[in-house]
Amino acid sequence: MRKLILAFGFIILTSISLAGCSGAQPTTSATPTAASVNPIGLAGSIIAQGTVTPIKSASLSTPTSGIVAEVSVKEGDHVDAGQVLVRLAAGQQQAAVAQAQAALKQAQAARQKLDQPVDQNLIIAARADLANAQAAVQQAQAAYDRAGGGSNPQVGMLPTTLALENAINARNAAQARLDNLMKPPSAADIASADAGIAAAQANVQSAQAVLADTELHAPFAGTIATIDAKVGEAVTAGVPIIQLADFSAWKVETTDLTEINIVNVHVADAATLSFDAIPDLNLTGKVTNIESFGTNHQGDIVYKVTVTPDKMDDRLRWNMTAKVSIEPKQ
Image (cartoon, rainbow, N blue to C red; front, top):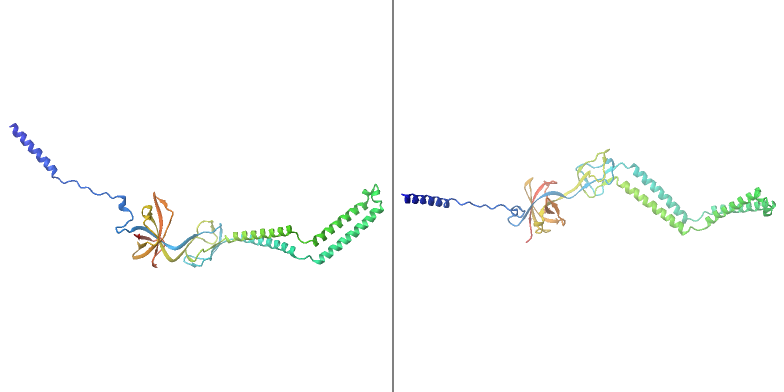
């Protein structure tokens, strides 16, 4: 009986073991790796997301702060390069220019005077003054001598002595005026006058530059995309008030390419562009620029890549989302 029980138990254990071996084996699934989400396509293309931008654009601001006096454009206007877009109140700056220009004219007149011959009438008058002064000295000398001159111990207290001194001083002054009229300008006088003109010209240029800063000009021909300036409002230097863009052509920029895949991209590589907002539009293009300097974006070093379409479409708009597929050259 004991042997029968043991045999029966062995049969049960064997059955359980066989049942365990014949069960379904556990399956293993591949866990996606970082490489499975990179922008490399199945055919070797590099996929990235980009943004549609004008071929040229600029955020414009006034070089100086002030009050808006004139806004000569509105959104949607086409402007030429150099055209005035906004003017600030410039009364003080205009007055400063006028003062600087007046000072320049004075400096130039002083310089011209050095080159002009002396008026002969002035010379004749100066000679006449000198002759009269010399005659006055002779008269005063005669009166001084009659009073005893230097032999008179009281001569210093006599009016004749003072009169002689005044006559001599007047004669010396007349002689100096004549000498000044007769002598040519010195090199030092000419250099000083030239320096005065140069300084005055610099002041004019400085004042004109400050005045010019009250005007905002278009740096290139384009279209006014946005404008944030009204007459009477204050604007701050360096704060953009106008977005100017050249909408004659478009480009697509992407910063999705990291240092891992940028090494496979080169200027002139072919690219295909599609657009979320225009599902039926697919454009071919080429890589036209790759920035040399990479920037840190959430721990990745990324490089801006520009793709220029081979043709344009009137439905494209600024900041539309584009899918960029780049075909690196092998």
